[in-house]
Length: 197
Image (cartoon, rainbow, N blue to C red):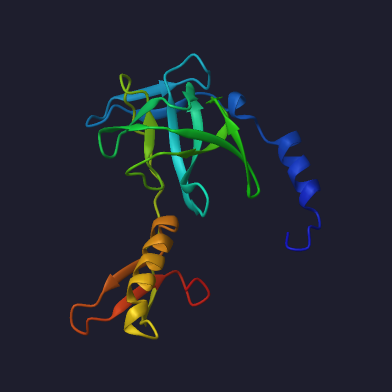
């Protein structure tokens, strides 16, 4: 992939052989707080059902939340419910992403993947749905970190920069954790291996 060998062939094969989101069938979720199963067909006419699968920080736009739309339509400027928090969130802008380029969109519908801006409290794995038709999708389960390393800034002035940078990394990568050791007072970062850290 780094040398761009075989990437186009692989992407063409994905388009040719893997099912489109519309062909996959209904997505299964639960009514929040209960075990009642809810099925949503991958159609624009169904209530909104979406999953936040990645959080990224853009220097110009701010926090971008990458979302897969399983059913319904999501419009820029509309409100959605985050079933983890139980609160309404306003989607200020929607983008279709192409590498690091953003193409503004007014609306996206079932089967689309987009990036949204405007969330106050969003995490990877959160279910977003229509305010009046709540649903909870199965969240993404992340493994626990296996290695930890203590870090410290070169100077005390850089402590805030280090804290802010590590907090952004932890927000973007759910397998990366930051905490302060109670005994030593050191900042400890934890991850999936030496290469990860």
